[in-house]
Amino acid sequence: MASNIHEPTDSTLLFDGVRVLARLISKARKELRGIHTPFTDHTRRAKRRMLGVQNAKTKKARKGEYRDLLKVTKKTVCYAEALLSELEKGSPLDLHDSLLALGLQQELQDYIKLTKQVIDQTERRVFNDERVPAKEKIVSLFEPHTDIIVKDRRDTYYGHKICLRSGHSGLITDCVITSGNPADSEVTTTMLDRQECVFGRYPLKVALDGGFASKANLAAAKDKGIKDICFAKRRGLQVEDMCRSEYVYKRLRRFRAGIESGISFLKRCLGLDRCTWKGLRSFKSYVWASLVTGNLIMIVK
Image (cartoon, rainbow, N blue to C red):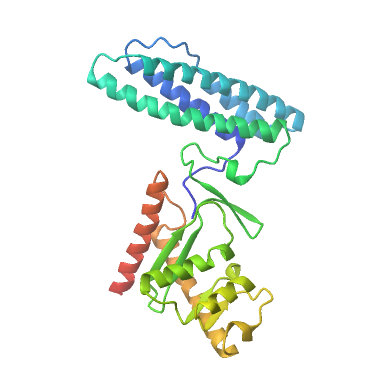
């Protein structure tokens, strides 16, 4: 499921850092008394450099634009750090100033940290020609919890991987929102164990997506007393090893295909394809709200 962010690039993330920090600094200088931090707004310059990076024709020209964009970003971070230090030392005159200063301090701390991380990954990637691991990257200043999800080595998504479990009724009976980009095969036993934890026993028959298929997962499922387990893609596994007969395998495969219609309904009608709420906690709440709503609609029908 995707987070509500724009397509991330290093240049757009640097520009986001400059404009957000500049906005916070301007707000503090305007609404708080006694703020003397020097400040020059580099937002327009940063935007020009960002567009220059996107439209550069050669690698050399792109690096030149990046170099100046990093320069103004670091300057803005220095302004923000100076303001943060002044807010921490200062003593606002009234309650309004005090509450506003506390809020600005927290925002400045968060965005300074995130912007520094963007600066670091940009320097490593652009100037040091280093491959930055996905777990060390940040793809949004506003949704920093967002993971990079590569599907089938082709498409890249930004959000969180969601594993759903359903039964004969069509109701969603469980959901796991993963952290990072684990392979489907790594969460198979987790989903099966959660079934046993919720219902007190393992299912007799299981139908799973092809990504869950592996000899280790098949053996683990059989050890848990599951008689028939169907992977949508065999990936070298034999039908007789998974199920008691070809007939059972085909029935389970058709059942799994039918579950896709329910997932499509959740995406099209209840917004499960993209979360529009802010923050990781809200992301999880959005997912569960969509699933509960879908279950209620299914019960009414």
